[in-house]
Image: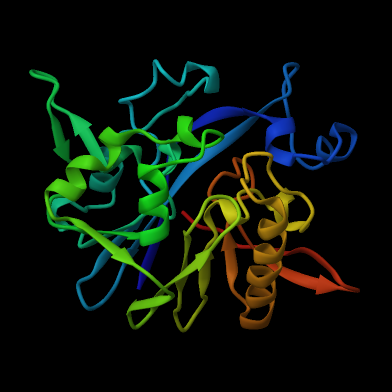
Length: 277
């Protein structure tokens, strides 16, 4: 198995939104911000190549289709995902599976693109099964008003129409070495990917634990629809990471993309930094 972390770009999110009820005097010691309280967030995708020929891409970043509507987030250093894959000697048509943790714009924007000539949509990964939980898919079609600005139909409508969308209803092992588990709270039916290997196993935590600062269970984003559920689900994932010695990939952390975690006197803390490319 070969693993590569792909950075598709960065944006600014308000620190108060990222850390909810945690006061700035506390969170600014763990995560930097600018004079406007803007925190730089990464948009990380994970490419996993298996010996059996499966090539799996987890999350696709925001892409460029909605930048004008989302100018508040001040996107910068955006990378073309196809170009980044080719740097790794992977053609988009070789990707066999796309796992989308959830369907907010910053996690699935590059599933489709616009043709420059006529602005028609095209599927970015024509031969890939696109895995989404059924509850997240249904939520994206009829989102709560507090969440609706995070969904854009053009990111996924063509995927469904093309027969590339595959929905899961429960924790599922796609194949040996890759399991998808459902975690709620941030958004209904968020998927977390567990990647097992002999050397080091990983969990792509999505927005269950978006930053290393969010390892503290009570440090929950104001974007989470159900913070009490998020708290319980985060504990469940942290206990699994500690017990199984999983390295946690923080998809939005611009400074520490991956680490193991430990539990000391009932508190969860960063253990060892794990370097990914």
